[in-house]
Every structure is written in structure tokens, then in C-alpha cells.
Amino acid sequence: MSNLLNKTKTNMAEHVSRLERDLATIRTGRASAGLLENIRVEYYGTPTPIKQMAIINVLDAKTLEIQPWDVSSINDIDKALQKADLGASPVNDGKVIRITLPSMTEDRRKQLAKNISKMSEDFKVAVRNERRDVIEKLKKAQKAAEITEDDLKRYEADVQKATDANIAQIDKVIKTKEDEIMKI
Image (cartoon, rainbow, N blue to C red; front, side, top):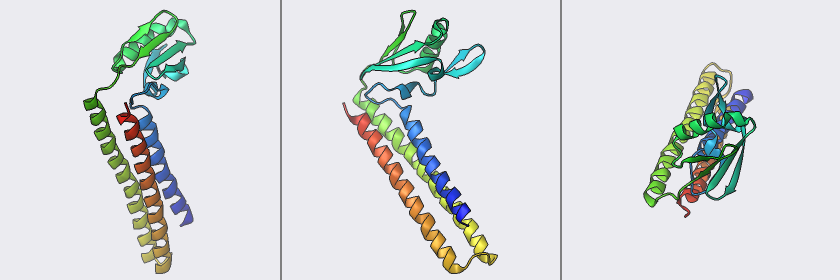
């Protein structure tokens, strides 16, 4: 049973980690290399992440610089960036690509905060589903006389404690990102 509980806690923590990764790709008021995380460039017939093809520098709060290791791939990177629709046009000087991000409007900030709030609910549901699944397995084990009723109650309390901790972590991550977005 302890393996089952550990696996469930690990799965819950993975949901929180995935939320953090997903939030890193959402644009805030500041430039971040995470904005380019999911962009893939067609490179020798293979979709390749930009971070595997170039150095990504954050020059200031509004500017990203992409310096490819293979200068011949700069046009492919430029095309992928334009296709990604970042809300800013990449400027290609033949050696590096610079992206200057415009300031976000108040309406856009509010819309992003709303989207992030919805995203948090999806991840909370995923954590609660993990809890539901493990409790169902525990109840089956108790009915099969593999564990006692006291053990069942103790395990359920342990799972609930892990669920509450992960939901609180999701709320904390979301609050931080919303504050970052709403900050001008």
C-alpha cells in the first residue's frame, strides 16, 4: 500500500510541475526564454526545439535574442518564430534574431489571468482524480481484507493531506503568475 500511496503523491506532484512548465510558456509583461519553449524548427527534416539549436538571451525586460549555433539555420528559425505568433515580429540581421515584445494591454492581461485561472482548475481536477483513484483502490483492498478499516482511514487521511498540499501549491503558483501578468 505504501508503494501505491507514494506513486499517487508522485503523480500529484507531476501535475503541479506540468502546470509550472505550461505557465512558463505564457507571456507576461517581461521577456522570458520560456516563451520559446514549445516552438519547434524544421531542421534537416526533424522538428527541433529552438533551445537545442541556439543560445537564447534575455537582453532586457522586452527583448529576446536568439543566436543560432549553425548560422545557416537562421532563416528556418525566423520562419518558425513568425509562425508561432508571439505578438511580435522577429528581426533577423543574418547572425542573430531579436524579438522586441510590445507592452500588453489591460484587456489582454485580464484575459490571460482568466485563462490561467481556468488552467488551474483543470490541474486541480487532475489532482483530485488521483485522490479518487487511490481511494477506490484502498476501499477494494479493505473489502478484500488486505487492509483493516483503521488502515483505510489512515491512508485516506494521508491521501487527503497530500491532495490539500498539492492544491495549495497550485493556488500559490497561479497567484504568482497572475501577479506577474497584472504587473505593469
